[in-house]
Structures are given as C-alpha cells and as structure tokens.
Image (cartoon, rainbow, N blue to C red):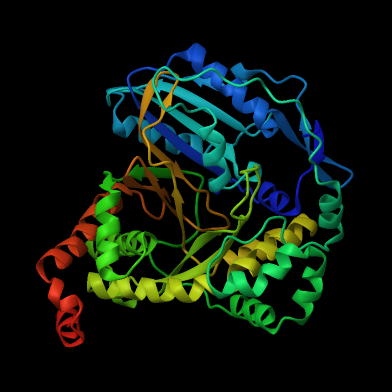
Length: 476
C-alpha cells in the first residue's frame, strides 16, 4: 500500500459524518483474565500496523479531496495509553470510561485510533479501543484486531513485516471521484439478491447503466425516500454529547442455535427479537404504551465478497427494520422479525444505501449533512451483529475473556445496539444518549430474559410449535 492514497467516497462520507453529539467512532472493550505483557502488546501492535498501514496514516484534506497519508511523526505512545479507573475499578467505572471516550473526539491530526489499557477488579485488565468509522466497518476492524491475537498464551513469532505494496486501486479511485463505480467489493448476500446482481460485481463498468435502467433499484430508492419518520417516544429525540454504555451477561451460542433450529429462525433473528423485547419491557417499565410505538432500526448488511481478504474500509449497506415493539408475545415477535428480515435480505436496500453513501462522499459536505438528517429521521436505533472468532484467543499472554463493542449513530439517532459472538458465547453492548436512555443497564439486563422466554417455549411446548392450531392458541 502506498504512503498516500485517495480515501474512497464511502469512507469519505463516514469521515465527514462526525457531529459533536454523535461521533463516528467504533468503541471496543477487550476484557482479559490477568495482565497483558506490555512489551508483547506493543510488538503485536507494530505487527498490525505493518500489515494494515491505515493505522499509521492520517486523513488529510487537499484540493477538495481526502487522502490517507503517512504520518511522519507517528508515535505509538500517542495511541497506546495507560489509564487508572477510580473507586473500585469495577464494571460501573469501566462503563463510565467507555462512555466518556465515546463522547471525546479522536485527534484528527494523528491516525484515527487509540487504545487505553487499564486495571480492573473484574479479574484482569481491559483494553478500550477507539477507531474512526472512516477507517473501516465492524467486519474489517474485527479482522484487523485478530492480527494481534494468538491461539495460545505463548503465542508464535510474528512473520516479517511485508514490503509495502502499491494496491491503491488507482483506476477504482479515479472512478470513485468520477461517480462511475457502483461497488468496490462483491456482495456477500444470499438468494435472489446475489444471483440478480452478481453482474454488477463482475462488470463494475455496467453499474451506472444498471442504476439508470433498473426498475427494482429505482423502486427501492423511492421506498427509502418515502419512509415516514418514526413515532415520537423516549428512544428518539434531540441528542446530546453525553453517552451511556452497558453490556449484557453472556449467552451460550449453542443454545441460541438450537432454539433457532427448532423455531426455523436464524441466530440474527433471535437476537434482534430479544433486543426488541428488551426495549418493549423497558418502555413499559417507564409507563409508556409500547403497543403504540412504531420505530425502525438500521441494520448493517455485510457486502464483502466471500473471498474478500479483509482490507480495511466500509463495505456494507443498511436495511431499515421495523422493530416489533408493539407485539406482546415473544414467539410472535420473533416470527415477525424473521419475516421482515427475510424480505429485507432479498431487497435492494443494502445496494441502494451503499450507493447513496458513495454519492454523498462525492457531494459537498452541506449536501451530505442534509441528506444524513433526512435519512436518520427515519430510524431510532442502529443494530449491528458481527460474528467473532469461536475459539479462545490470547493477547500478549492474557486470555481474552469477553470482547465488546459499540457502534456510532449518525444524525440524532440515540441508541446503538451491538451484538458480538466469541468463543461460543454472545453478548450485547448498548450505547445510548444520556438524555434519551440514561439507564441502558435496565435494557441489557432484560436481553437474556427475553431469550430465556423463547427457550422455555421450545422446552415446554415443543409439539405446539409444529401444530398450526396449537401455535395459534399459543400466540393467543
């Protein structure tokens, strides 16, 4: 990779999406058993930086275009910092540190990431990671972090740092700035969406003509543009710069898969349904009538090709999911999520949204800000599910016990839900605006309860699930 390269149009859109009340920063917390060997940690970071040069590049604006440019004054000490938690250094203190960092901008005069290492009373150290969304999406950033990890406490020797390669995709970047390229990477979608639009991937030069003549794409764009705003409720409103974070207890992934197999639903369907149930319970607990609430969540869809090697950058679209907070029965709520997600998975919303971001990255900043305001008014939350590694990992000699992360929200969206699986367990992370949801712990503590309700239905009423009449009776 060269020392200087164009920032893609999509990444430019994310770079310019920062606002004081909503910073475009992905926040991660890696919780370990015991202490990390800081010498090995630094060596691992240097290796990651050598294979992912974006970590030593600044975002620079020159001549109306943005570039990733090597920082000649790069200093690892400016990015890896030691912090001391106050008081008992427990979960509450760690959550506050994460919330404060989520509200604090990264230094744009340096590469857009940092890490904070701290001791806790939770059985080991924690490493809080901040990375600007312009550097990459959750899928690519998880892969980047894995380059630091080992499969054993002892680790293995790091391979020599590769020679810099000139893979800047000059032709692609030129197309980006001329507006003639649809998608930089292939679509990682299923069903009819892949089969209908694989030609766009294999013949990118046909993409613009496809956009101009495709009735499906035009119809989908119209559908997105004409979506009504979410109904007023405590989950939406004018946001502030003060955030709150919380995370759930871990749930065994094999249990989720087993329930999903019995109920004919994906793991993602189950987790989103449990999230919707947790928010429904929270609103009822506050005295709100959840049956009258109509809100949407933006759900990222990975659009990387199966052979994508994990280069940093943003390669995802978004779908707008109507959350069934108004559905009381947990099983009916699950099937509602499943049906809506199936329809969205085969729609063109991800393609359209990715190309909107592509276009906004080329447009004047004022135009982008107006468009973001219009789009984010149609949703109240962001829900991201990133599959992580299913084997135990180690960093600098310490066992990774629990990884967590929080996604940023754009516009005035004040709720971000992140679901991450690791080592056969799943956990939910929640970031909220203090003004809207000051106590996110009340939501996340309900997450496992909502899943357990579905598990009990499977265990206690299995025969009813396969009998249409019995299922109708079960759902009331």
